[in-house]
Length: 317
Image (tube, rainbow, N blue to C red; front, side):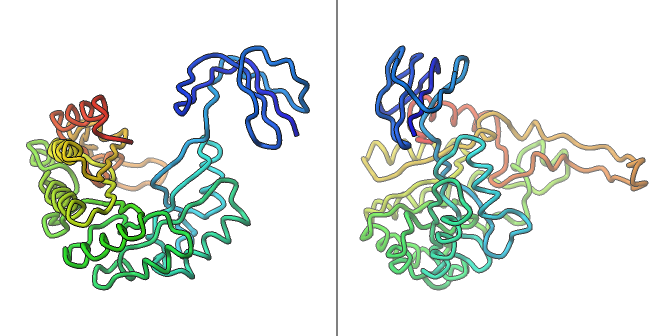
């Protein structure tokens, strides 16, 4: 089939294109991109007023299958991705069972080929069952097709074990996707530790919870030569350490989420007690859980540092 997309605002970082142009595609492949294409086509889309871009890649997706299909499935996750313009997604390994062996990797891959409408790249866990005690079959999962390893929503607290995983990742030339959180310091915290958390009467999470693990992971990346990608950085010192790592030409990349560079802990407000008239239930006074996340929203100083890191291309994603 020949497809012609006309009058769209084409943005393609690979070719540094940023202009209104037409695109001609044959059997799913772009064969021409220029103004006023006159070729005949089986199907024509008038994209005037729309942006036309390569498919997006989401590096951190939770498909929840196997084991938690009540939250999401491979099919619904892929459909949502396609609807938002994402054509490739990386699925995290925190399923039930955990993606810690080739069989579970192949299960996801086979199901994605059957019901998925986008490319699904399944990330492998670092440790068996994400328990932090014994390494998963990283080499076996690599042979099955994983593009990276991650412990997802936790850190491997055993640094010797983590170093061994990084050595294997360096050998296989795959990145380690790191959730940086010293679980021993969290202590039941639910928001950034500051004057506002005390005002709300909520346990706080200090910046050091993230910073300590960021520092460790960067040092181990330097020791092993492993590619390290720091997920959802939220603190100003994380930015400083990533800046240092890049100055030292280490194999370190990092990302920031939109909520972490647009909102602060001051945006968390208290919900006053009330009565839900429809359900006839009392609603206790509490902080608005729409702002509850991990890592938590940080201070204005942290937000400013994250913005500067993005502006300076220190933060990659």
